[in-house]
Image (cartoon, rainbow, N blue to C red; front, side):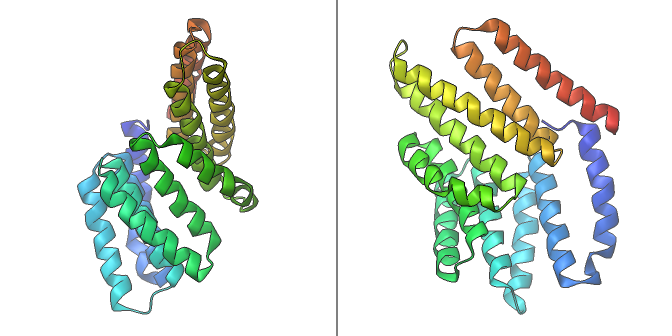
Amino acid sequence: MCGSNELDAAQHILSQLLAVRDASYDLSYSVTLLEIDLQLRRKDHVQALEILEKLAKKLDAGDFDIYQRIKLMVVKAHVYEEAGNPHKSFSVALLAATLAHRAKILPVLWEAICAICAVFHSVNEFDASLKLLRSIMPQVLECEDCDLSARSLSLLADAHVGLAGLARADSLQRKEQLTKGMENLDRAFDEYSKIEDVKGQCEMRAKKAIIMHLNGDPALANDCAAQYLATMNAAKEQT
């Protein structure tokens, strides 16, 4: 997770951006999305939703871009997911995916599908999630959007680990699924590293440490934990 120092530094930079966001509509939209992301990292879901709803009203009142409208719906689905409300998240994500498909706006369609898969995980529908994610991964990687690639790969890893949890403890299937899960966590870590997303990097290391522990390999689990701390410390030194 991001430490308080990193979040405070982000808040300082965001405050400067908020002061000039009215310079253009697109800039205002982008800065507001950053503001929502910061509140999510602070775990303030109520504030994130309030900011999001205000932005949605602005879109309703003016000439909105369909991409921005759908993108905001995907963000809303993510906020509901983070807040532990999978039913609302699924409803919003499904509508976003439908609109994106009709408008043939592919990048935001992949984002909406990722939001749907996150809900699938909350109800243990890992096989359905895996099939969906596999169907879009080639196109996701072609977008060259590191954040989208990282989230998709992380969800793919979660699906494999979820299927491993449904298999027998000593089965070959469980071992194979855990191995695939770790491979995708490493790939997601690399994508988060490209955009210096410390929160994402740490989450991938933490997940990998848990898998190592479940695999009965405490030495490798400790190595992952050490890498987690090293990533956190390196980020603190840069702030």
